[in-house]
Image (cartoon, rainbow, N blue to C red):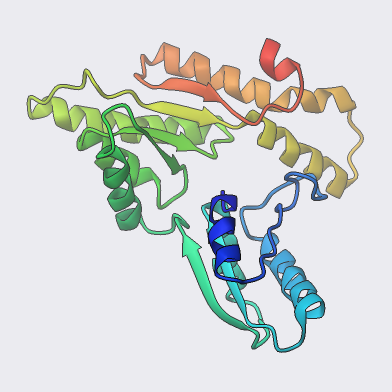
Length: 239
């Protein structure tokens, strides 16, 4: 997400350490933790930069989206004095800020899908943005209960509009179930707990969640479409 700003940084004659978080790109690891463990990785990156560029190097931590959550959590660590500033772009910790950003994105065009994390702060945002006519996309959804809570919030927003005589024809909510990340977490848990299980069984956890969400949405006539994300293997396409 951040690579788009790299050219500007180089034009300003600053050095840039651009990294993939754990379990992403070429970085090691099997599971992402949305900043909880990655904040320790930030410390490693900081000391790498100091060793590479010198002990007097001034460092600005900059993260976007999940990266923003990571640098914010890193701020609670005992950071060296080299870190002079932290910039968190769209860290998604405030419902008010998410609503503000969602409305700004919606203003670009009526077909814009606004992606919001299905966190405690994000749930009320689904209802409010839907009520204001925004097509939302709950993301980082890993389980059935989470998908249902998101759908219920969206439904409340649609019901409020209907009660006021507003049309819902142009509202197109979508729920993004990240089955690959679910499988990543499951594998990490099995390894951590040293459980003995058929390795092939671990390929079906996310699929089972997605199918259950689909069946439940259909049974309850929930007006939210489903999107599958973070494919890991062929079964994620064919199942």
